[in-house]
Image (cartoon, rainbow, N blue to C red; front, side, top):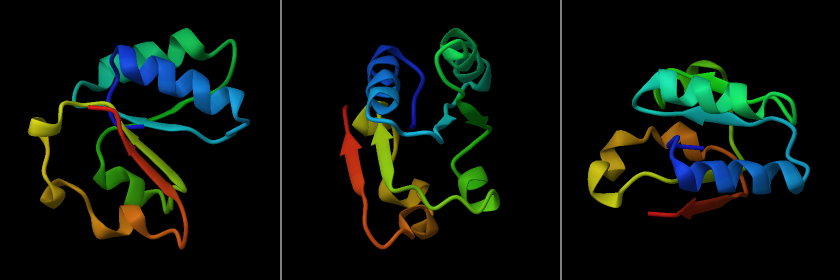
Length: 95
């Protein structure tokens, strides 16, 4: 999950209801991501990473990527190619 606003809350809960057990959250302001992780902690764990590059550093190959940040804030260059390393998956831009 990229982003920690209202749309990300809805998407996080949907992932939980779908049975996704390992959820990573990245946000420009890490404290906002940590606050959301804490708010959901009674239901399921969310692993907060400091930035997109940390996904690669943790060896994570996400099968589902959901972006909830405004489209004009990022570009393709902001995302490492390894973020899309899984053979199959889904990428949703909610912007």
